[in-house]
Amino acid sequence: PDDLKAQAADEQQADPTMEQAFITLINDWDKEHTHE
Image (cartoon, rainbow, N blue to C red; front, side, top):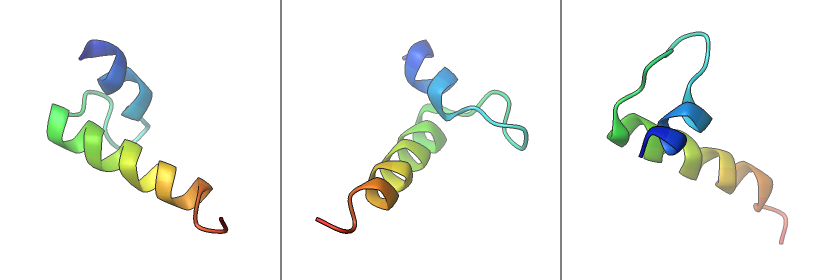
């Protein structure tokens, strides 16, 4: 869990909750895979 949260951390949210981390990671994945 801490690794997931670290991947989703940024300047605006240095210590995201698990929910915020999942949302961020899913949004990032969607951005990378929208052209398939």
